[in-house]
Length: 370
Image (tube, rainbow, N blue to C red):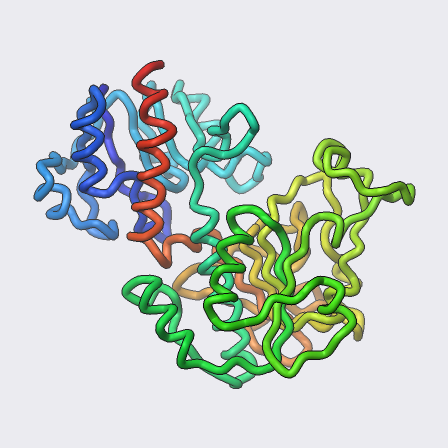
């Protein structure tokens, strides 16, 4: 099997790659595959690093059996009659990628989306969610610092690696800010790890609502903290996962108490949003910064203010709850929205190494046995 590692064509470009140079070499040693890499000037691993490992770097990958990337492939770059691996962002029928899905069908392409590669227990086998959560938490505090002027810190992308970031965290003193983190999966776990590394103390949801703190604190919410059955019956996990439309949001106490919200859930289109635009416009909506790592675009979204995905180059926009319109960031009466949809790209080498390790462990053996 001949595998081509494609260059990322989405704009703005993603710097990550499916397999690092060392992982390409390992794959060709351990499996009956040949791997070539499409030349790319923006990739976090340079062409020369692949060549040093004996990997062919080329401008022509049209003879490969399987083509593998990270983010969506532009329609103009799709090669007909091929098998592609990438995150297509079409699973939820996202309107902005409808043309991509039509092109895949029209060009007789076999698409394997990393998002739906799961084991027998429906656990995803390959994901970068932890890194998205890590960068999302960092950016949430970075945004709050810019908004309030209380502290400043570099972006995650400006650190050499996460070890350098953790060293910096030890030098900074955060004000008595209250942070609510939603979710318990990979994204939320990564976000919670960063908040702890920042020295921010975790408290229970009950204490978060009932107590005041002289230090920065965060709480982490599971589903029963923010949804309830419409008919008043007790929450059941299986019921919520199978029939989210039967539930309503009970998140209001947290938006009244929190200064920052980090959204790290997987959201079903049938589930309730955390709050409405009307609630955001009410005087008791206290949240000033929302880091929406989930980044489903409104109106089909858990956060109605997520009007669009922001970018690493321009990470934050403002949202005016009274008009429902975008504004410049850090404006009085508006909420700052950090909605980057490729957050792991701020830690490209770390994320690529983890991504490749999962691929070699879980996916490539099955692909070779197919």
